[in-house]
Length: 178
Image 1 (cartoon, one colour):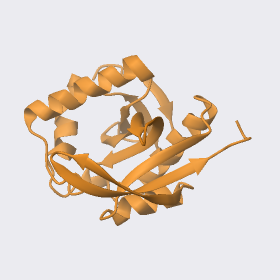
Image 2 (cartoon, one colour):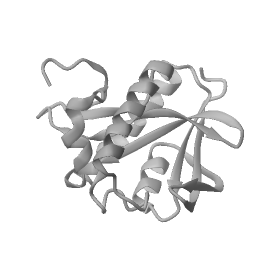
Image 3 (tube, one colour):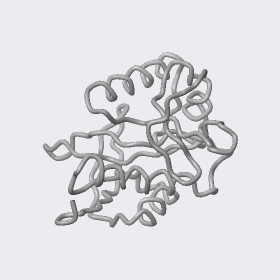
Image 4 (cartoon, one colour):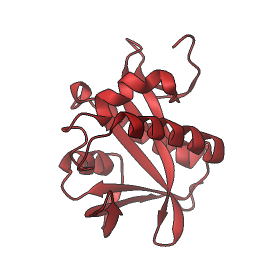
């Protein structure tokens, strides 16, 4: 990508909107069964294109979505991290989201990115709370949410891709601080 426009950054990462030019980086994540195990399926080419279109729609409608997370040192995309709005129990809530290429696991990028986007939610968006919905079978994502300062607030079952999937609800509140 020529001269990408980065909209936010953390200590080691810089974030920009996802576009069609990110197809190969997204495919590395979305077609990897180990990365996608909590989703219980990998994506097809068509689903990856729909993913990109959905992020573009989120940016336009909400100003947030998954963002390409690039290493400040190398410029390489390590994953996708950001915020998006979800419908949850009849409410529209802000959710922090993170997904990394497998070769960048266990290097602190998910935690760094999640913390950065939670700070953004509080400071730039002025929200009082944010969520993370984590599969009960995904201990790595649970650790990220907990280390980012979120606490487990219950469980719910999400119907996705024809399956019922139990999730933990993680929550952080900043009431009175915004």
